[in-house]
Image (cartoon, rainbow, N blue to C red; front, side, top):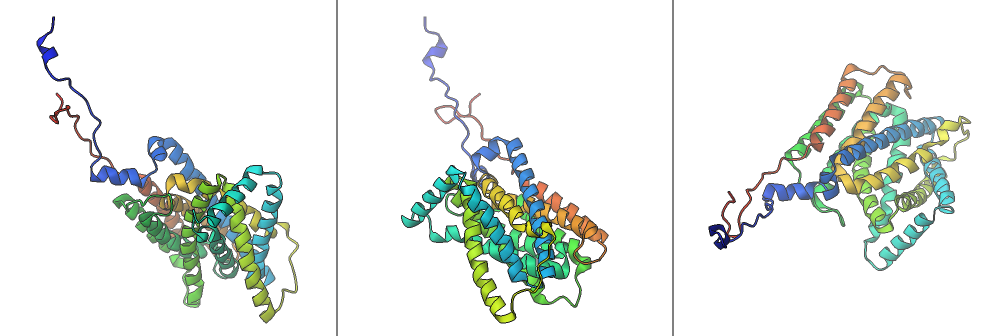
Length: 357
């Protein structure tokens, strides 16, 4: 026998639709990252590790450039050695070779713009700036310019979007994290700013940081098309080596080749280190976004830069307490920027649009 309840329309529970803030949050973090916070945390930790390697490469290339007395040749050695390693590896890594074919086809058919595959030119500029600047001011002060430029670039790229990476609104958390990062790196190196430092020494690292933020974004797009981080890394080293070869030939035609090459083995490992952190960043960026990864990377860079200048400086100078404080503030900036915005919950409704009891 039917009951009174049987005469009533069934209650249909519907999932709440995201309001404006929730919609922005869904664009802010990729779905898999929002659903798996532990995975996101591990990716940010890996990004921090790539930042450590960036600082290590800066230390190596800066020392090599100083001993050679030629930053252009030093940069070419770094990129050229990395290219040789990757070329040999490609002989044994079939997915990487297939990825190169996919990217070449995508460019030829205009499925992706050609400038996606020239991210290596930004890498070349970054390595050249390492070789020219680190020997003059140390790793920490060099990192100031790089991370400041990288933070600004990451904000712009995330806000505009690139390729399959949707625009990510600049939320208060991200904006505060970026501002704190800028404050932190200025604080960290404030004691090292000296009147005798030429303006270009500070501007070149800042420009390199701007280029690195863009490079990370296009590497993520190339990796997505190729299905392999190896392909993005190989493309970076190929393009970068060509750019640096041309620059080195022009430079040495004017000033001449270095007369002495150091025999210390670790001075020639810059390219090897570069292959690791470029591949790592290409694999990470599409899951975290440019800004979050950039903040984690610059944290690793700054902390390691401070340790290098403290334990193994290019030039003899003490690390000031404010530099260490700046490193700690940068880590805080990463944590703040990684906090997702709290979404507003909408009530469940019935099929008639009334709130469910």
